[in-house]
Length: 273
Image (cartoon, rainbow, N blue to C red):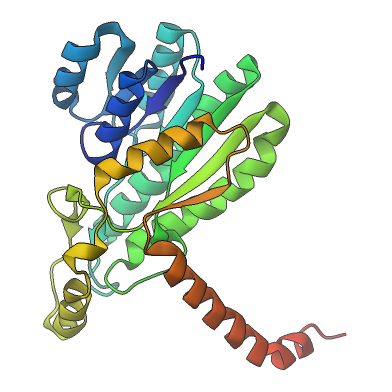
């Protein structure tokens, strides 16, 4: 299979770095962006000119367009964009400051939007492309204590589903990847936590005690799935990563449908005719 040129944001650690290394290992070319590119020195030492590290803060729209331009010119195009940059904000809705909420949406939604806008013309000119948006199971099913994070991922879901219909005629494909919990530092050093109000101690204790070690996936196990996804001729619009997501979502959707159905008489009457 012909090597691909893959631009991945948030490549300094976690799933992003694991995937970047998996692409390089099989012969793909990688444009790896991160706020701290020193963390990519090991990959540069091992793979040389096959990887182009670019320092990038996705919150800066001009930087996003400049990164896409630099990467495209360096490798002669971009076949795949993986919008992976993002972080988790942990805290109750009432606890969340304005700045914390704005920062979360700025990175997880607008950063992804800027990168997407920047790469579409490059892919359209080449006549093909593939945009992979990293969402979350929490982009479909909300949980307490992660409401603003969930809101950012719900926005990614809607944005990307609309995008898929808009760029299909340009031979640009779109997938939304929805991981469940994995053993990265997403909930550790990478996370931001609000200043706690004691009234939420009980719900937080229940939240943090819910996850058992066996429920957390191995990050390295996701690499073959991502490779299979980017090689697919007909990739799905949505793909879960992990074994917890589908059973949980099936139950939530069954509950939603039951509630909508039970209130359908009121809904229909509200139509007016």
